[in-house]
Image (cartoon, rainbow, N blue to C red; front, side, top):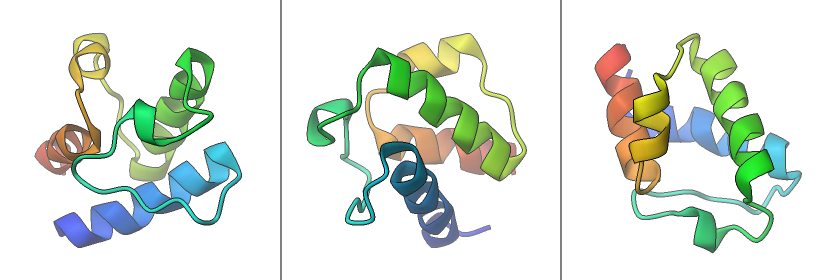
Length: 79
């Protein structure tokens, strides 16, 4: 799976979780960039991404992510 394909799926997950079709994430996207991205929505987002990619994140991975680009790196590492 290419980085672009991962972003296509991630954008779907973000749009579903935040109910906002205009969201377009990139490597530098953080929680500060999306209005409703709080700690509860973060959990919902992680679960949605795990389901979409059929992977499970480790707690240390989730808490250590600084931006969406790092999340993509973890996802690609699991594929």
